[in-house]
Amino acid sequence: MPRERGQKLVAQNRKARHDYHIEDVYEAGLVLTGTEVKSLRAGRASLIDGFASIERGEIWLENVHIPEFFEGSWTNHFTRRKRKLLLNRQEIYKLAGKVKESGYTLIPLSLYFKDGYAKVEIALAKGKKDYDKRQTLKEKDAKREMNTAIRAQKTRNF
Image (cartoon, rainbow, N blue to C red):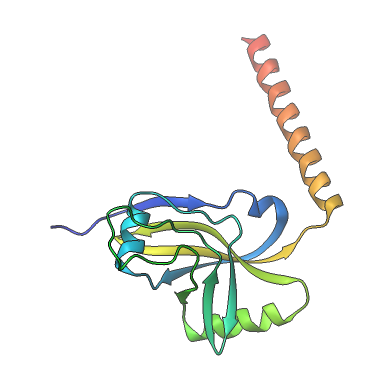
């Protein structure tokens, strides 16, 4: 059977960009069991409460929900277990140094298959305050109103 090509999105954390200032984005591989891969290929996962932690020089993805595989047997996985992330040693050291600074955290942005391999996009992020969130919403609304005004102007000219 030929290997898969391209990228297939499984889950995305849309709220992360609203709640955090994204500094850097990294692509990491995942260490998964067989039933987890089958469940992901079915397109079921949730990144809502997920985060990554650094322990003893390794990065672990925690609190990501991958539901049990229905056709699985007693070898099924736990839904919210810790999963190891695969990154280069230099990237791990760089992220560990940044996370030790105050306010930085590692959050998953998306979970996808790339050329048949499960990947997760993690971001080095800093939490937004409530006033930052309101400012972002105001800018978004202003941009939307500006675009509708431009479209209306274009339709009147033609």
